[in-house]
Image 1 (cartoon, helix red, strand yellow):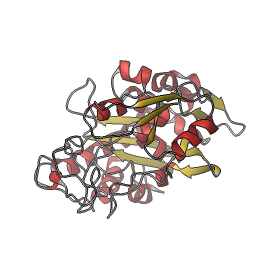
Image 2 (cartoon, rainbow, N blue to C red):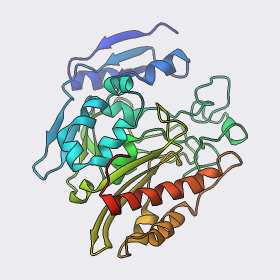
Image 3 (cartoon, rainbow, N blue to C red):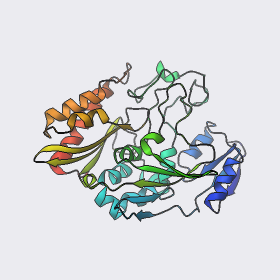
Image 4 (cartoon, one colour):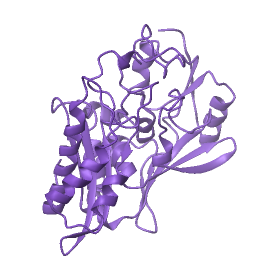
Length: 332
């Protein structure tokens, strides 16, 4: 590992100023992914600005019934928070199904949103990767791409977004609060993650030095009947092959409101709006769930090793919807 200087920030403004004034600097929160990438020589900042002592922790009740979650709140703390468990079970489940218990105790909410892709070619400095070195090519296109994306891809990148948390937040229409030298602003979480397009190196709309300070989850009564379902190769500490976040509001067996998102199959946390449109006003049964899931996966672009993901994602979404409709959610 190269020599890197270290600074501990004491307040938000000084942290933002330190990174803004020196583009070679990087924020350090939980470090559960960042330190790995430093060791691999994939990330190469010359200074780390430690933000772990900033007052950005805790879960705050909002007047409208929503929650404001501090960016430095640890994943394990938020997953067990009574308000999160009661009002947004899909969010608690997504957190508990992400990473290992040790990582969840250390990883921060804001850091989870900023984690980099798990593509092996991104993490190998010897491989071509447009995300790491723009214009160098994408080794995954003709390489081992079993875990790669089938939705939202481009000819420049097919890396899958790794976050479970972000999938639930997209379904819940959460908002990301950020602070920069020009002041504070908010970004809808669905707009926070960018498709690769022709600029796969740009994963979010933050300007250099902007810092995530909180995540706002709006009040949503239907979220009490919700589920995050994750399918993976093994039960312990594994990224999703396909996942689904689902919330349903039913009236006499008919879908009156629905929120859906997919994970493990797209280059960003994927809001399943096609499926939502199909389901509105339909009876909540397997036939409607299958039509909705089929519509959502229709534009999928598969490759030889990841072609199975289209059917897997369809079945995962149907199962998640069926579970919420019949039981109201529960354990994923």
